Amino acid sequence: MITRIYDDLNKYLKPNEVLIIYGPRRVGKTILLEDFLSKTNFRYKLENGGDVGIQEVFSSGRAETLRRYAEGYDLIAIDEAQYIPNIGEGLKLLIETVPNIRVIATGSASFDLSNKVGEPLTDRNTTLHLFPVSQLELIKQVNSYELSQKKEEYLIYGSYPKALTTETFEEKGVYLRSLVNSYLLKDILDLENVKGSKVLLDLLRLLAFQVGNEVSLSELAQNVPIDPKTVARYLDLLEKTFVIINIRGYSQNLRKEISSKSKYYFYDNGIRNAVIANFNPLNLRNDVGQLWENFLVVERLKRQTYQSMVVNNYFWRTWDQKEVDFVEEREGKLFGYEFKYSPTKKGSPKDFLIAYPNASYTTVNSENYLDFIAGS
Image (tube, rainbow, N blue to C red):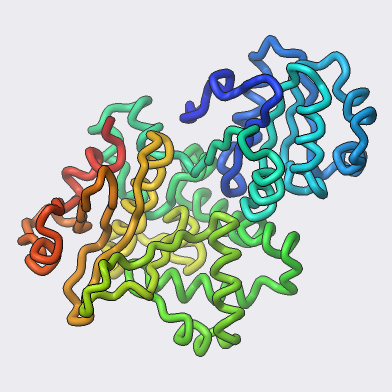
């Protein structure tokens, strides 16, 4: 079993507050919760948000109903809490009604769970974001040499827990295709009344081939084809359901800088490759640079989240195609990063350093990448 970053939930639990654990489907939220409950000394009740009876309890709006429901328990745990109507209001009433009660709620759809929970529970919740398994987690279980020896596997099959533990490459591919077809778009189809997944998958395929490049909404709309406003809505939904990540261009309004466009990355390389049905080894691919960039960006985001780094993320590009792949704004400074799979040397981007003389610049390659994504 892979030890996760939030292995000990005790440190996040507080009386009369809600601990929210959210993230993509199948990243291990339920396993994390059940493993914690199997070891806890709290008297607990574990529920599923899809249960109609539980939905009625938490949607009742009645303090007495919630008091009787939680009587005798120290901890209430609700898996898939986003399915409960007005869940935020129900949890708020619970923690205001029952003295010293602790609550854990998990969910896979951030736009539903966090929005419906977050506002009513302002200052009364702790939120943990669980990603697919990170290199930061894995390096605590194997050494850096062993981890680097499997980097091609991570680039191709990603790091969903079951993709990591499934033995053969063929079985990994079967699992990832099943994940895309069965679960990837379920939150959108269930919660946003989107009528079919074909347009969403067509849109994802276009994004998969444009990883690391600026994306034009009008161009996507022409190729799908759907209205640009619908494209924008679908992209927003895909972000909120942990399928893709949007990185904006950085600019201090210099006339030659591009800031209005976005680059999109997938939460997981294995999902990206399943979307385009390509699990070929690196020596048979022409998209190694895209796989490398997607892998590094997402692993860096995992590290930022798990190490509580306060940072804004961007890319930098000028109209005459000068670029820096990834730019972090933190500690009052800019940190630029270029992603190159090959360890060959490359000069610093003069235009970027002239425009921002206090910025730093680093090339991240296949030899030094673990410092970037799994350092302390």
